[in-house]
Figure 1 (cartoon, helix red, strand yellow):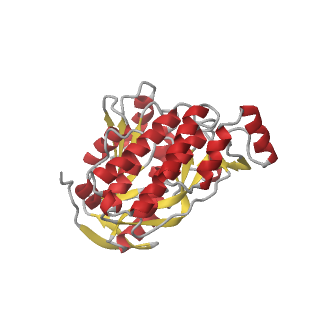
Figure 2 (figure 1 turned 30 degrees about the vertical axis):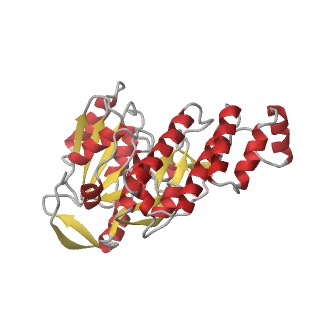
Figure 3 (figure 1 turned 60 degrees about the vertical axis):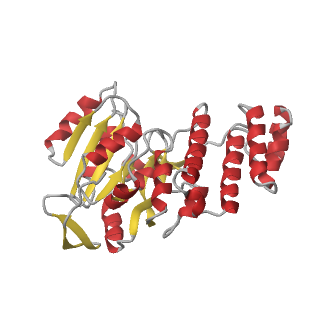
Length: 347
């Protein structure tokens, strides 16, 4: 499927040569939402508050049952905003609907409960338009809790250039920070509508075969973290990630681009993290996942430690974790006192 291309003219901007459009905006923003009426105004306002104003915004309502239609109504007087309501099909289908409704060369994605800082689009466009070999531009992020308070965040290692090996090991691209060149979607396709939890990981793997990635090295997204134990969604998330990895290798020829050693490392680390997530709620399943990790990488020390740990009674494991100075309960990110992102970075 070919997505409509664009013709650009150059115009000087505050951060260098940015692209503006004649009739077609320089960037299309897609927000897919489902029952997030309480968060949606913040997300929309953070788009409207961008220093780069040459955008269009598609809000795709995936069959919400809350007050989303009422929330969006006041924004529709802005001709740049389009509201599309569909039957509930899941986020990948909703994002694909937004992509098909878009016109710009660049498409930026924002989850309905996240927020952007004001210079996000401007800095990404400045970077992306200077490097035509780059297909995906992303940024760092702030983490915030459901009330908008800043959480202590360890910034992950990020990578630029040909990043396929790195991203097969770990998905480090924050979805709400991503901006994708239309040519990428023309070539590798849209979101896989089966991948409700890992829609972005699947797309990044397919894209990284053919395109370079780059990032703005500062946090320009406020990412809302779900706190507490991962609960039942953990199985779904890990199983979906493993399915994406297998399909990339078998269907998208990933095994021709990645070494056998790296593939085994990726599966070993994924199964070990899966086991860690289940260590308290389902020790038997955790044990099996540690065994799977060891089968892929027999010398993986953390998997052996986890394997023996889950064989011990819970009371013994808790005492050992205390002695080793490790958290007894599932770790909960801590607020940075006095830092409310909704007040510090108003949209």
